[in-house]
Length: 106
Image 1 (cartoon, rainbow, N blue to C red):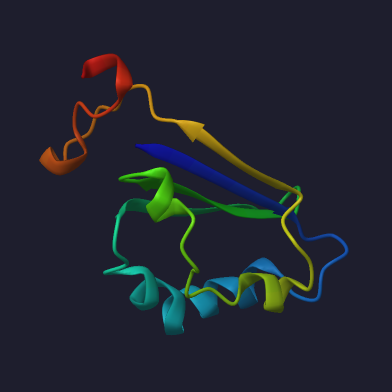
Image 2: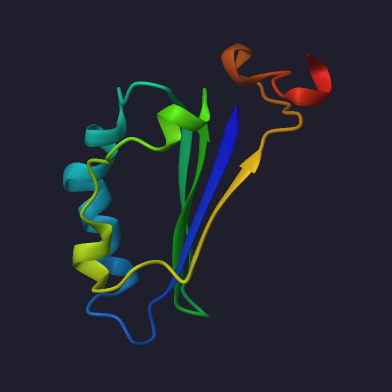
């Protein structure tokens, strides 16, 4: 399993957090709802520092490499400032399907 982290600084972008929230409600959440190999996605923001991003947990590196149904780059007008992939070491969660996953627990 892998974790993907993406983060944008919106200070010099074409959009803002309120517009991106509308995008989530109108289309993005539904588009990612049943994406093959995606176990979890959380969109994150910080209005004070004008940052926006997401954290994904994928079943595999291959799943993490698939084309995504996202218009975030288009709306923001640039690639993320940070885009990294990490091995998943361990999880805890109240959701049974997300609990006790990772390399340390295999």
